Image (tube, rainbow, N blue to C red; front, side):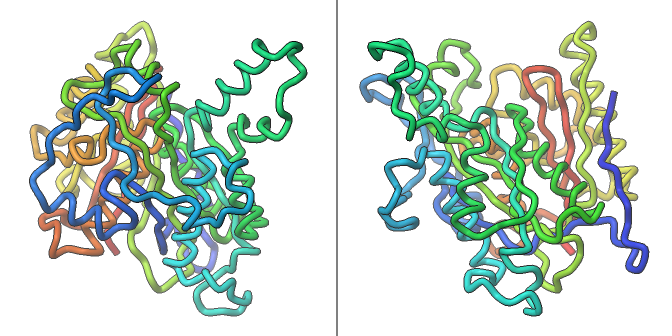
Length: 380
């Protein structure tokens, strides 16, 4: 079964696309789009040595370079923020600044809806794995289960980051958190696109986040889920989305389509469902495979899944070149599609750094549960 985003175009303008008008991103390349463009203009660096930190498995990791939460967010209340909270709050702040809303303009300002008219949609696999496990451990280790620290509980909620970002930045519109593992960012973008096109929001800060934690690292290690030569990483990318109300556009989302493979069909069924989903997305966008100039797979960092995804892509595009971001950004799971989209936008914003991206990009992903998805974005 495949679910395509329901579209209700504006009766006066006929708009059925969503514009990306700003971006805040923290990745293994650094802060912002410029470091991303620079990173992909250089030969890929080698895989880091496995970490030797106490309490961590022997996996190569790529933490964020120079990420200083106190400098970005201030020290007040910082100890009550999880790593996931910090990443989302900082990325939303950068997205606000990038689009020109950092000074909280009036509703009549030409840059579009202000923060008070805006909402937030985040994609995440779990929220903060370390916060969840630490709170759960306390229920066993304290003299009684109820003797946990209640101030730690909000950080265990999946929607903690979205809620705190909305409070801090005054985003009083739609507020949602979408889960879905490796598909989380893509699902969040689909949700936000639907909300904007159906008039349930005017502006949404939308993206995905993944924190690097010892808890998550052990899960990847025990499950032997990382592809050879891939580092486990973290990151967050948040995009300012408008339903065609801004003159300044970084990219234009035409469609986000998702689907599920029937478990009885095995991995071959996942490939086939991905191919069908990509074809449906292109048809909805009014494009053909020949129009696509860039294909960005999302499963390259996961053991065995790169081949599953590639098989589906070859059904549609043949054996053309792919932009495989895991060599630079590592495996970022629920933030993967968001960081891939940020990479595409970086190439379009700084074309002298990354040439040959063209103007039509297809981003895909496949989850461990057989879920698949496709995002079609163009340079306006």
